[in-house]
Amino acid sequence: MKVIITTLLLTLSSIALTGCSKATTPQQADIAVFEQFLSENPISSINPSIDIASIYQPGDPLFEGVLNIQRKLWGEAKKALQPLADKKNPEAMYWLATITYGSSIYDTPKAGKMLIEAAELGNPYAALFFSPDSRYCNMYFKNQCSEKWVEKAQKLFAEQAEY
Image (cartoon, rainbow, N blue to C red; front, side, top):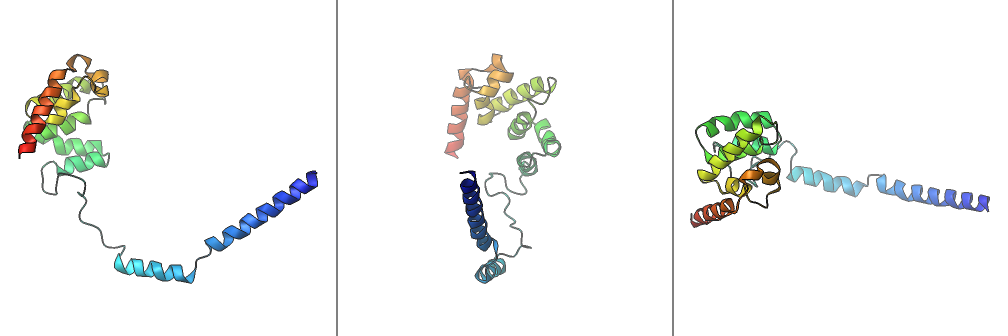
């Protein structure tokens, strides 16, 4: 019985390996299709539109900061956003606070104040951050979570929708 199972396993293994070897051998037709693809889409060409899914376009003051957040370059993002936040730009304050609030016990209160100020200055996402349903609000700013912020966010979103 042991010999039959061993023989069966060896036979199945050789069939599987033989079947896979043909798939891994490049076919001449594949090379032609790949060359056509490369001629239509050269590797050296870089798509200049890196902002496809962003409301921030190159040249916008927030573009570099938000792009660095997307790339997880927190230090570079902070350098780009801090001067705008210092000038009370509510969007910059929101973005800077969102990458800061969980970083240390010293930065969390600063980030909370920045989020509240951003909400008061008109950023609906900052206001929505303080929703009682927000996991992060409940984790970091439990005393600030309130329905008043949800109402504020709804009002701000409605105002933005009018534009």
